[in-house]
Image (cartoon, rainbow, N blue to C red):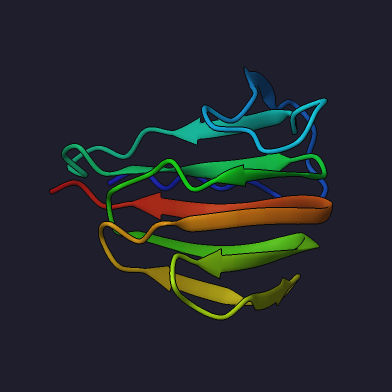
Length: 117
């Protein structure tokens, strides 16, 4: 099986522009970019690196997600929940259908895996 290695993922360049969040709460909206990683045998699961400039927006992914924050800082406030301060070095596990608001205060970079249904 091949192994994909992204060296120095916290600082690597080459991210593709991915536009803005679908549900921005600030103007101008945050800007998104990323590197998608195709994994043989992963089915419909998605993985890669993702980066977001400062801004506020609603979480737009309904699937379960695992992420590790490589750089930056933000707050995630779950719907009907308490704000969670998040910084580089933190690992998050989102259950499916988790809704809420991202408030990115320092450009955020993460490794992610979005799990298919």
